[in-house]
Image (cartoon, rainbow, N blue to C red; front, side):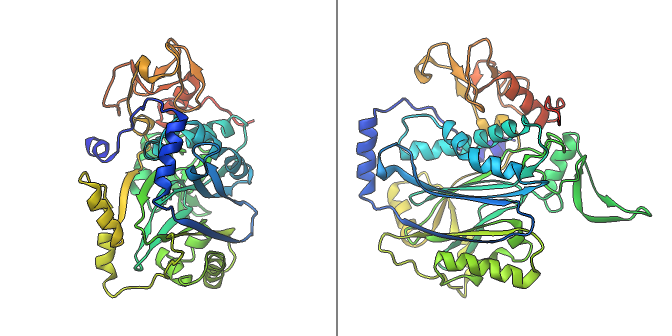
Length: 432
């Protein structure tokens, strides 16, 4: 637990900065020239349960074009398409609603991982309140300048094909068959794991969670399976070098047919739109249309518009080991030199399924909260009176602190949700 805490970047509250000052800072930063984003998508439908989102005109500071960022996402639904549609329509606004107002770019990016966790959990809670049993994966990508932040639950995947031919995963598959840690977490929280049994007692197919028979350990929705199937995402944030790179975001219809390396190699040298079509074509050629198959390709292109096609290198294994460098505490000069030679800087990574760990610790202080005596639920953002808020750490055996005045705080409904996800009590939501 301590090592995991040590790997995580702590989130800090920041005093509000005047909007004029923020716009001035953004304008100065714009002189460094952001990369451009080029993208394309392709899909073949079998069940009609894959949905996607592509939005390139989001702004951190409304009315300020220099604060623009892009969002790309894939939602692979199951047991119907209701959860995928709901998540596509609401997840972005819930994530943005969990971000403090008045942050500059660097502080905004630092706050983003925690806001993604809150947004995923809020979306899941709201969808489950509808009483529908559908579920969905979610792979959600935010691109702000050279920084890429990916949050994911389920088995839709996002990979990075960096310049030089090194391919790296920016997500973790939450399949019970392949993820030992997730199997242990689910069983510890009260779930049962096993394969389908047929006549004669033989077991077939992948490992599933019972009740419900879901193959995944994390998703949005799936209220008929159990709250131990959590919506808390794996989050990874990286900063690309000034050589740029290519992201391939796809549902499992692609990844069940192609490895990450195969998908990247199949479309190198093609523009994004054609690249997405080629990946889908290659997956269908390899496996046929056995599932919904959706792919988004995003090229993050240097300002000189000369995105070079990635090609395999003879010493790719060496390059791959050098590709990701943890964030350095040394000078910006070193970061610039690493960027110049093509390194990708890892800024953040956390896959814990414990909400208290992911939301961190916040000291209650009047100078850091907008209204004295009033604060908000860290998940659903509703205002709470001091007597209503329950610390996310209160009574948690996973917490490093038991001080009841330490935030963030949860409303009663979100606290019940947290306890249900940890197997402490059954969910209060019932299927209609």
